[in-house]
Image (cartoon, rainbow, N blue to C red):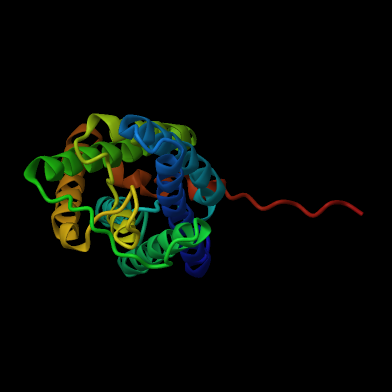
Length: 247
């Protein structure tokens, strides 16, 4: 496993670029298709799914490619008894890096499109059916990444996670934020992908409830899942050293 500072840089950068993709594609979608919300969502979800998969490939071998406090917390909780996965002292660092990266990603997207760097969203997303959507979205994501790790298939995680999030944009009422850090970051942009700061508590609580339910189900379906925590989302052992060329 890479040293903690390297992992934090990977989580900060990966989460930041993920939010840049979410927010930036949302801005572009509204400019290209100003009168068709369905097409805007299609453009936004497609860009997000592709970006998430590629970012996991880029940074996963260093940090695991969590980019999500719900995944990091689940990784620590499930692996704590077996000595695998994140240690308790690392979890807070991961969550802080992810959250700061997400905020930075929103600011970057705003700047790229010549908008105010920080503009808090006015899009209210506070309703019971939206919170239920977030429970479902986060539940499915956490089950997916740990099931892949436990069954020895972390190599397909980039494609599978990207596909799940792309699909969940459409089958959940909340359009699948499914990530506390990304949710906080999206409060810093008053654009298509934004969420009003006042709506954050409900979304964050729903995401944590979804993650907790996923952990409970995983313990039933995949006994010993904690031993696979080192392979969530991507096996960090895959970062093999490259030999120096013979001269």
